Length: 351
Ligand SMILES: *[C@@H]1O[C@H](CO)[C@@H](O)[C@H](O)[C@H]1NC(C)=O
Image (tube, rainbow, N blue to C red; front, side):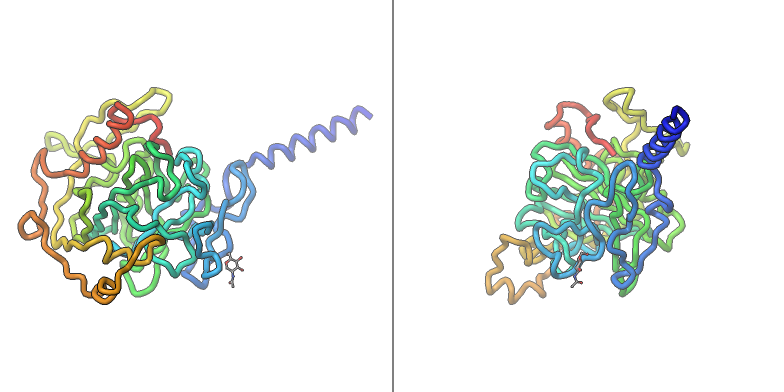
C-alpha cells in the first residue's frame, strides 16, 4: 500500500513539474511563417507556465472588430502600423504584457482599429537597418490605463514565448510582400510609444532591436525627434545599438541594473539621435481615415490620396542632431514620464 501511495505521489509530482514547464520546444524568434498562407491559428501552441496564447494569428474579416484577439501585427508606414495594447479597458501593460492584441491604423487584416484622434503625433523613420514609428497617443483609447508608464513588448520574454505570447510582426517595407520581422521592440506607456522593426535580412537586426533594456524606455531604445502634433515620414541614419554609446572616444555598453536594486535614477549617457532627412508632413485626418469614430468629410475623402507633403518648419526638413539640443521627443517623452511619476525612470517600466 505504502509503495502504491508513494508511486502516486511521485507520478502526481512529475505531472506538477510538467505543468510548470516554462520553455516552449521552439523559441518564438525561431518560428517563421509566411504571410498570410503560412499563418498558424496560434504561433504558440503549448500550455506552459504562462498558460496558452491569449489570442490567435490567423485573422480575417470575421475577426475584424474592436473585440478582435488578433496577435498578428504590422509596421508598413506612417499610415499603416499596429501597436500592442490590452484587450480590456483600463489595463496596465505590466499586467497584460503576455496577452496584448494588435491595434492597427488600417482595416483589412482582422485586427482592432486605433480609434480616431487617439494618435497625437507620429514619426515614421526608415533607415538602412529598420523601420520605426514613434509617437504620442491617448493610451486610454487602446485600453491602457491612464497614467500607466507601461513597458516593453518584444518577441523574447524570460520564457522565450514573446510578449505577447505568440505575437507575430510583418512588414512590406523591404519588398512587395509581407515579410516576417524576427526582431522588433515596442514600448507602450506614458501616452507615448515607439515600435522598431528590424530588417530580417540585415546582420544586426537583433542589436538594433535589442530587447534587454526594458526599463529605460523610448528615449534610450529608440532615440528620436518625434514631436507632438506632427505626423511625418522621414528617412534617417541608424541609431546606435540600444545600450551602446561613445564616451571620450571609447565605445561603451551600459548594463541595466536588476529591478531588485530599485528605481533607475540615472543613466551615464545621453543617447544620440541620428540625423534624419526628407521628412514629409501630413495631416492626421488624411492618414487615418478608417478609424472608428472618424468623420471623413466628402471633400477630404476626395483629396486624401493627394495630401501634399509640406516641408517642416525647420528648413529643408533636414534635422541633423547637434549636441544637447533639438532631440525634442526624447525630452517630451521623458517629461511625460517624469511628470506622471516624479522620478527620472520608473521601476514600473517593466518587461
Ligand atoms: C477567421 O479567423 C478565425 C480566427 O483565427 C477562425 O477561427 C475562423 O475560422 C476564420 N474564418 C474564416 C472564414 O476563415
